[in-house]
Structures are given as C-alpha cells and as structure tokens.
Length: 522
Ligand code: KIV
Ligand code: ZN
Image 1 (tube, rainbow, N blue to C red):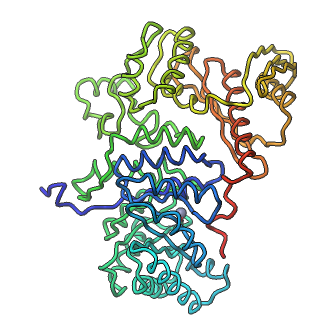
Image 2 (cartoon, rainbow, N blue to C red; image 1 turned 135 degrees about the vertical axis):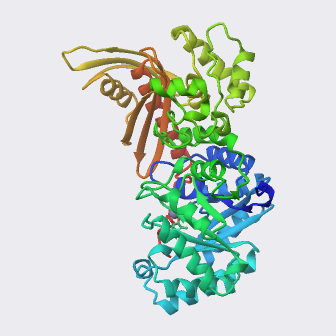
C-alpha cells in the first residue's frame, strides 16, 4: 500500500473569503475575515484566496493584513484581466511570505461578448495581462472563467498562451455549475493531453454546486490529473455555493483506497471552522449537510443505535473525532465553574481570550439558571453570539410581550440608545412583529429585513433558539445573531445586533462594501 507521504498531493485552495464572501448576505467584517484566515492557515489550507483587492478599500485592507499575518498558507488576491486590478492585487498580497496573483477573464462565447472582444483580441489581452502579473510575482494563477462552456479549441489556445506568458497554475472554473463528473474529468484530461507545456503547471478545478455535483466534479477532475481543488468552508458561495472544503477533504481521506491523494488539511479542525464561518456569515449549516451538519453523526433510529453500540463501524464511515467533534456530550450545569467551561470549550476546539471567556461565563451561568442541562450545542451558541459585546450603541434593557389568540400582540420595550434609555409600546401581527416594531419606533431606520431565521439549538421545550436577522441598507448587508431560551428575546437581540453592525458600517462610510464585483468586466 502506498504511504501517505508517497501519494500525489492535492493542493487545497480556499476561497471562502472571496467567492464565498461575495455571495449576497455573506459579508464579513474585517476582524471576522482575519479570524477565518488565521483558522484556514492553521488547519493546513495550502492557498487562501483572501479577497478581491480592487473591489473596495475594505477588501484591500483585509487582503493586505491577511498577507502580513500569514504563516503557512500562500495568500492570493483576485484580479480581472487589466493592469490596474493586477497591480492592486499585487500591492495587497506582496507582503505575504508566499504571495499569489489570480487573474481571470471569461472565455466562453457568452462571456466574450461582455467586453466585446473577439477571439484574437481576447487572446492578446490574456498574453499582456498574464505577462504583466508574472513580472510582478512568481506565483500566477490564471482562470478562463466559464471554461466548461468554452469551445475546446479556443480553451486550449488560451491556456497555452497563459502558460507561455508565465502562469504557474491553470484553474478551470465551472462558473455556472453546469458540468458533470465524466465531463469534468474529460476536460482536464483533454487540456493535459493537448496543451503544450501543460505538464509544467498545476491544473486546478473550481466548481459551483448548481446541480449538486460540485464535490463529485472536483474529485473527478483530480482523478484526471488536476492537483488543486478550489473550495469554501460549508460550501459557502453564490447561488447553490462552491465545492465544500470539508467534503473533498474527507472524501479523499475516507476513500483513500480508491482516491490515493493526500491533502495537507488537519481534518480535526473542520467542525470549528465550519461553526465560525456559519456564525460570521450568518448562513446556517443545513442539518443533514455532509460532514458538518448537525445530523451528520447522529444515529437516531433504533436499528442504527443498536448497531452503533455493538460496533461503531456498522453505520459510521468516519469517527466524529476525525472532523473535530468531541465524542462525548458532557452536560454542564449551574455548578460548573470557569475552569470546567474553559476545558469544555477547548474540547470543542474553541479557545477564547480572557475577556471573551468572562463574557461567555456570565451568559453560561445565566443560561444554567434557566435551563437544567447545558449541552455542547448550547455552549457553541453562546460563543457565537458573544462576539461584539462591548461598545454597542443599542442595548435591549427590557421586553414584555403580551400574546393571545386575539391580536394584535403588544410589546413593551426599553432600549438604551447611546446610553439613554427609551421606552415604547408597539403592536404587531405576532409577538416578533410587535417587538420589531418597538425597535423601529425607538430607532427609526430604512434597513430592509432580508432574512429572519430561527433554529432550536437542542431538543426540548426549554431549548435555546438561535436567531439570525439579515438587514440591507442601500446595499450594505449585515447579519445579527443571538441565542436565548425565549425566542422573542433572541429575535430582538439578533435584530439589535444587526442594527449595531449597521451603525458601525455607516461610520466607515461604506468602506467594507464591495464597490465592484468580480463579475463587472472592466
Ligand atoms: O466561478 C468562477 O468562474 C470564479 C472565477 C473568478 C475563478 O469564481
Ligand atoms: Zn466561482
């Protein structure tokens, strides 16, 4: 049997902070981007696409700082096929110990029509821009966007031009999630066979999940010779998302017998980063999501449980510990102290600074007073919502809601606005509507509610509810989250959390807002 060290290495290129973050509603703050980048670096991701530096001041700042902080991973910045974008990407990544520029242009007939370039003009543009990028940086990735719908002869021609101009990685994007496994493999094989110089570069696969085939398409590309997979944590990304990092990493690990390729990713860090990406992006992970879903390791049916107790391999193809899930769900209660909490969180892969730990401890004690047993999921929810505590403009002081079969419902609320308490009574169609109307009366604003989502953290009627609220104010999109055993209180806190983030964003005069998208053709 081949040893892992002798197996072909597949590079993991994570684009959570670029393709993932650019999906509507998934915007992250500067600090959140730095945190996610640090986790990716630590878990052994080979290349982090940290953002699209020309898009906004905020993107540029984030990519620059991630580049400076990076320890192990190559840091990559995205650029369209023009000198200005490429120079900006280089400025952002050049302080990384290992920088990369990723430049791209849409090569399919539909995409060629947008900048109105004919085949020869586009070929010339590719030659000029890749040459320019290579004069700045030794590590250049080039992508023919919508490669899977590009004529094969033309694709071979432009890939050859990019290689000759100095590209070191050729990424083959399935931009609209159109391809299927056999076709994905055939395309990589065709390029490797037909393009002169193909054996001197790394071929990469970048799939979207519109038909639910992103993971299968990526793995098929690897079997055909691709040695880099582009992916995002939780499959975050526009529309149906990108290839999920956790799926390709675990598929290559669990089925190494038939796919003998190694990645450098420490799979035990998967659950932690999955939870953090879900928390900061505001995109919950679906319960039955492969690898990281709440039910991925749950065995509820009687037959399954019986089999599991006799031999875990009966129904489990991987151990929970392989992805960083603690094997036991040790219950914490109101007598558990700070040290027990710290050690429990450590088991869950969560390490907090002293201030954060104090904040979570106070919330934990409060929860333990109201709820008999505090489970792992409860603690994770507490950590998720403890982030921005501190200098918030709006703070919920008190809330009383009167419900009944006869509407309308009434909410009496006191909210502190920049230190001054304001109280109102508002009505609405249901308790949450009444409470949100109260917030709006106290703090009038024009933000539109884009998403309101409630999840029960554990089973039982005393379960905490985690609530996500996404607001949109003139394209500035923010997500707020909270958890409480009272669903209405959790809802209001999540709403207030989102408004506090909006207030911070306004203060930054929109600098975190992408001014251009990578889809705008220059
Ligand atoms: O999906 C896509 O084509 C992209 C490119 C910019 C690589 O994200
Ligand atoms: Zn993409």
